[in-house]
Length: 255
Image 1: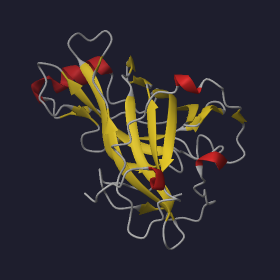
Image 2: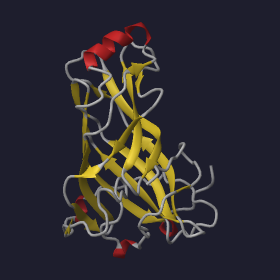
Image 3: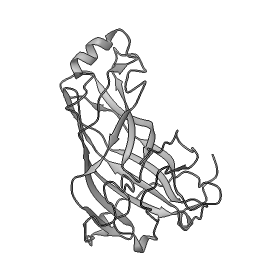
Image 4: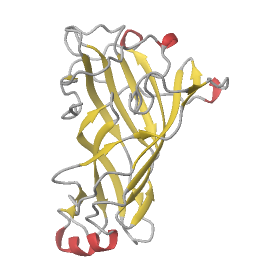
């Protein structure tokens, strides 16, 4: 499967460019084992065991759908859905391991007028996390500009923050870090109304480039973090996602 790309918030729809099994968008009452990473097929594909939903819907948090992107021209609002995905990944990169602060990703997916599968990137929100054992250094993930939520692939950059570092100091500044998630267990429906699905995934195959644009302290930062690191990196990913079809959302103006 060729990786689809999305340039950023409000970008046009991306389509799958190689023959693959279609994953039709279903109404909320009929969805079971649909794509995750806010819907990624690689993590919760058809045929994968899905645990029964738990009854405690009162524990389901309120979801902010304001990051939902506008639909492409001609898309059917009843067959497109906006998915909001939340995770607190644990990242081992080079010589350090960090439990990242929660991140939220929003995107839309559904059938295009010509019958193809479409996706539109929405938004990503994150906050910095202190790097253990490295005084005064924090790391914050940022969207890397590429994603395919049908296959569980996406890219991130990691901004490094510290008073001795240049403002643009980033791991993956020139080329973002590409992830290919693999599921590590069945998905669990926590609630049917509103829909809430939990899943776990991981990637232990990605390469971590050196930090760039850090100013004169770049060599010291990369030495302390053990970068670049072609192997030995790991991201574990305990997450959940929810969704609404666009006919149940307020009208979203074009950007």
